[in-house]
Length: 162
Image (cartoon, rainbow, N blue to C red; front, side, top):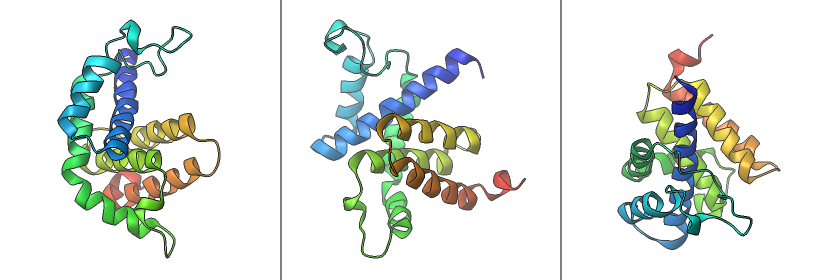
């Protein structure tokens, strides 16, 4: 895969996590979230820049088609992803107790592992762990890594065998 394509997919993954976060936090629908991100955050427009004049996230190079596939896909299979996530939590914990960003990262990563087998497991794990590190500096990246690694072993056992 070319570096430009890899970068545009990485940006799409970050955008999908942001859109899933926005949907969860504000109860907007999937199509509205995709439209808002496509028309605003992914344009590189001046209005999307922060006070220093830089984009808070470099999303204008994001693969828009891949972004939409991820966001729509997560919503489509969320009723299968969420029970899996619930089983990974400590006794007494619920999915709602997780940070909204953690939920978004896990849902997107799980979707990609389950439904997009053309992307190698190592790439999926690396990408979403990097996203986790962009948002968190404590235990969250370790938790996300553990959940996604366990999911990869279930969903893509053959690929995980060395």
